[in-house]
Image (cartoon, rainbow, N blue to C red; front, side, top):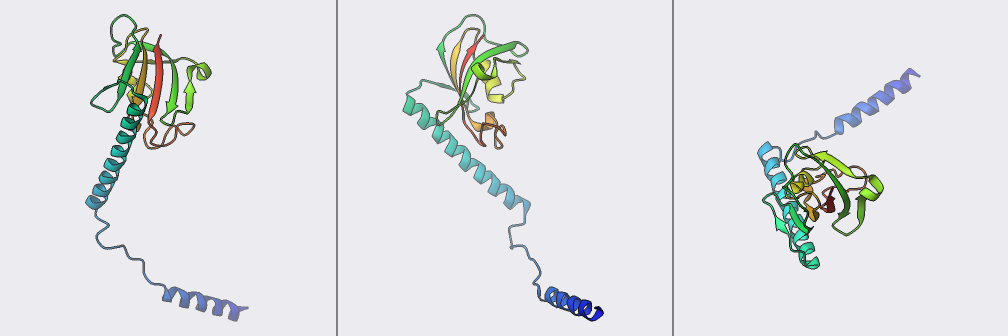
Length: 170
């Protein structure tokens, strides 16, 4: 029994001695190189999404207003009163679609969405309601960086999803 154990250990030691050490590829371990690669990939993805949004708008012949952040909105039916302000509570009837046109969520199934302006559940939606009044019906296009971003919502909204909202401010 001891001889078998000794021979087994000898074989393992021999095999481990034949193993080549792991080396990192040269030049790829610098943090600045990694940062540049990630920034380049991010710019590429952002440009692709921007192109998809522009094509979507043109294909549907929407007349939308763009903000500096990438949000687009179009008031379809004007309401009354002043623009919504930070600190005000807002309630929305809504339908949320992905850019392929598939309905993802709606207030009919999920209930009316309510939040305090300035503390919205999605930064793009929070930004959009600041351009609306009570009674407005609007279409919103929210790029992924203003929506649920890279991970999605871990439910029905996939990663890096462009969101299309139809909302009515109650």
